[in-house]
Length: 256
Image 1 (cartoon, rainbow, N blue to C red):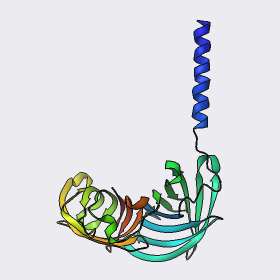
Image 2: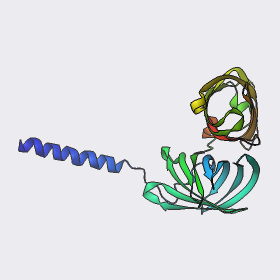
Image 3: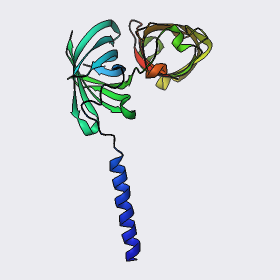
Image 4: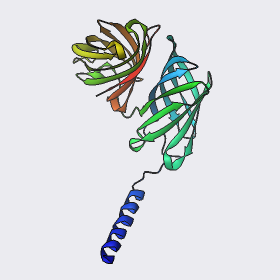
């Protein structure tokens, strides 16, 4: 019995030691990785209003960043707006950071990295804001309309669309043709309207993407057409988007 107990203790120590050694601790140089260009989207409330945002920023070693922001605040669309500010590590072992937009307005976000520093979760911590979202590194990709050539993406979205009854979440499958500019008529979108039920809709549309990995698209369904601005990340395997229809508050992402 004593031998067995001692063996179990040794095994437990070994497992704990292996687990502790497996942590990928962050340092001040862990972030930014790659080319330093990141995209993210957030959704939630700002002073009681529905609020969605989309960012593409370039983080520079030493603690600064600059980039572009799009917003939908209670259905009022703004952007693209040039932004800049600072970033800093808060708890190195936890891969946690703070990002402060200082121009043209003041905004503060906390984010935590995962997936070896290539993705993260981000939350705005300003008073009156309850928003959260995802972020990802752009990675090595040459962006053009051909980036989406013959690709199939799953869609996730959340927000508020008055024309379909208010609060809505969405999922779907978007298929791009061989040019990367046409969303095929074989695509579908499911809108979850809560108590009003689900709508499974055929979808089609078009998209453009510039060399700066910023683009736009229009997705047409029987429930209406939705214009979006887009930021490509994850080496072209993912993109974040913000719906730019006046009156709507919707953001989300596409994942290959």
